[in-house]
Amino acid sequence: MKFTLSPARLAPIKLAIALPLAAALAACGAEEGDTLEGDRIEPIEAPAGTNWSETVTVSEEDGYVLGNPEAPIKVVEYASHTCGGCANFAATGKPEIKEYVATGVVSFEQRNLVRDPIDLAIATLVRCGADQNMQVLSDEAWAFLPQIFENVNQNSAAYEAAGQLPVEQRFVQIAEAAGLIDFFAARGLSADQQRACLSDTAAIEAIAENSSQQAQEMGINSTPTFLVNGDKVDAIGWNDLEPILQRAGARQE
Image (tube, rainbow, N blue to C red; front, side, top):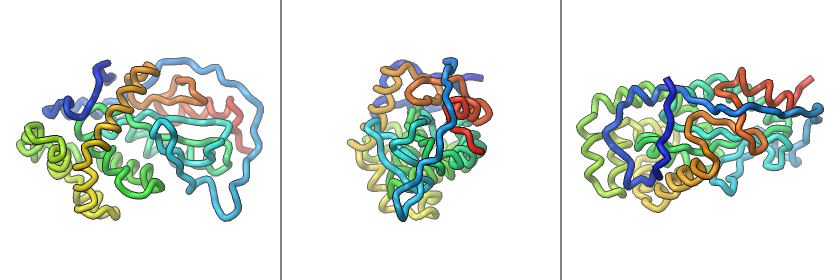
């Protein structure tokens, strides 16, 4: 089953609250072919006292870049926090791509493609702490995804009632219904800190607006979608993506 986003703008005020949660476990992928070719690129040393595996910057597109921000091979993943295919990549692809990131030749940027209110709540919370923790928290939330949906099913009345609340209260209640407050509290974000982030309407709207604008401008309507040096590639997982990186020059010997 393939899940695609509608072309409608996904401002949080307009996001639907009653969702067919089972559909969110479907994986989706890009459909463009790749034509990347290149000689092997030698490793690039990180600045003294640092390493690329722990270097995180925020891009102009509001994505979180792991690794050398000037890497000659730039990988971008448009991901949803309620996407089963994205969860699978986090578990199977992230550990592998980090080995390439460590060389300084490849950077990995995670951008949001928001598709539902739970997704937006998680996207807000993983950004609530230090920049360095965004991708780590995202990966842990993907691993927790089945339990998140189970929590929402068990608390469906509270989840649906959230849709009637003002935006500054809505995502707090969504997070509580999904068990996210306790989950992230166990990972260093206090409940008060989370509620402050989830009440920040401007920040939440910015995440949704960036997602919608980029999806429209770049023709991205499914998750995960991968870009390599700005081009969409035909990959939905690590087994597809690694050969593309190697042809682009990220070959380890």
